[in-house]
Amino acid sequence: MSNFIGVNKKARQGYGFDEIALSPGSITINPEEVNTNWQIGDFKFDVPVIAAAMDGVVDTKFAIAMGKLGGIAILNLEGVQTKYENPEKVIEKIIKSSGAEATRLVQRIYEEPIKEKLVAKRIKEIKKANVPAVVSCIPQKAPTLGKIAQDAGADIFVVQSTVLTVKHISTKYKPVDLQKFCSQMKIPVMLGNCVTYEVGLSLMQAGASAVLVGIGPGAACTTRGVLGIGVPQVTAMCDVAAARDFYYKKTKKYIPVIADGGMRTGGDLCKAIACGADAAIIGSILARAKESPGKGHHWGMATPHPNLPRGTRIYVGTTGPLEEIIFGPARTDDGSQNLIGALQTSMGNLGAKNIKEMHKVEIIIAPSIQTEGKLFQRVQRVGMGK
Image 1 (cartoon, rainbow, N blue to C red):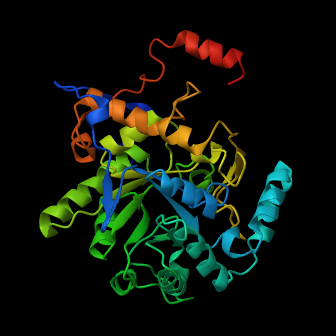
Image 2: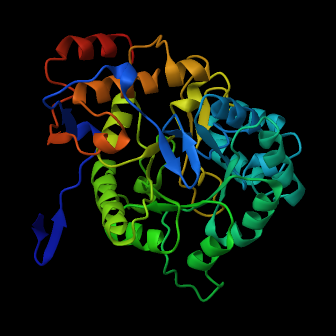
């Protein structure tokens, strides 16, 4: 439904995680008996959580730790891991820089060219631990880095940009043919990011093995402020999930839809899946893990853009080991730990036996859901400086 916002100009309402709630149905299930598995291509994963391709979150060690817990982590092939032989020292410089100089320092650091030998080396480091190697780059670099990654043993390749479309117009360079790229790759290819039914469907038709949904919702992303573009995640997820369901009816090919960004708690993860996500890419929550290379610091992938940075360095702190964040026990009360426990409990209370049943639960518009009856929580948190 659209409303007029001016003469001859309509706009429709978009919804974010804080504006909805999930309504229980007529049955409940023991949380220990629900199934959180999801699948991309021939790969099946127990944990529907993917660590974001951000240098403050994922290095080879983190990817290995995440893989051993049943999830996956995306290594950014255009980050410090493939530009520097010793990325730890580079990350330390970023961490120690002042807020005023952080963005410029990151820009200078990322000017270093990618070294193809390091691309292969990092992938082999992950594969040596017998866990999935998932890597990413922007569309323009995909033809070159895709082949190197595949030859090095990568399991899944991600082509990711702020906004990805099958039809891209440029007179300065030759746009990448995504359909050709996907058909030539022998491993699953995730494509993103998008926020609309039409683009989501076109990416599936181009051969995507999964589609990433989200423009600007991440804690370290400033795209919505800098560019003014984006769609609230709930609306974006529902629209692209509808495209997935339509595509499945037409082709019998099920293409997972991945919510990318904006999830701060286990509750947000549950809402994302209820809106149609098969899994979720998370950054800031996982940046709080002891295994995170950023040591509690986190910055967006577009932060180093030479002309128009669309990310910022933030400090989220370190709250515990990765295993506690994924599986608990939770030692904080803000919903940022034991994500899978929260998902299982939510699914059990909603009567959803698996991810696809979770897609069918009732969603209600509830903008007061976070504040209703929570006066003392708000007073206490403000008083404690939270």
